[in-house]
Image (tube, helix red, strand yellow):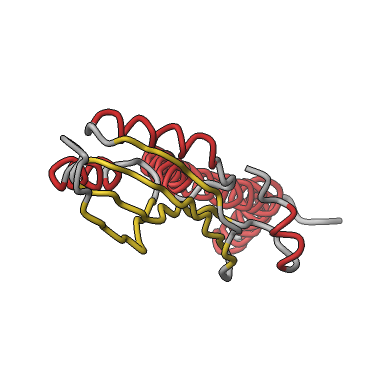
Length: 198
């Protein structure tokens, strides 16, 4: 017959109580504390990751305006470059502008002749021969007006001859005005020449 708890010595009673406490604490640890600790650690890891994601999102959001501004600047620069070096020859447009510049500067544009395009690596040059009469002052103003065109236009091969009985027209000027345009996809000179209808 097992001894009764009250009949045991104090040392035995405390041993049994201690054993029961150890069993209770072990059960508490294994069934509550350990799973709760693991769950807490996992939750904390999730919170940390969410905080990192949040900081990363804030960083990206802070850079978004800057990136959008850069894109806008690049698009503006591209539009400017497309004006300076367009993808089409636009000789008719250029000739109208040259005629208007001649009229505005009191020059008489007697004739204009399109020349064959001159091909370069990634662009082509479209020359137009001009025959003008006027004065030196008018010619200087004409050249100044052409230099302020939005797109690139050069004037070269200038020959000037004096007019004896020209009245207000004291000189005759023959020159070549050249505009330039981009050749985005050219396989060879034949393809480029075929695309230069104006």
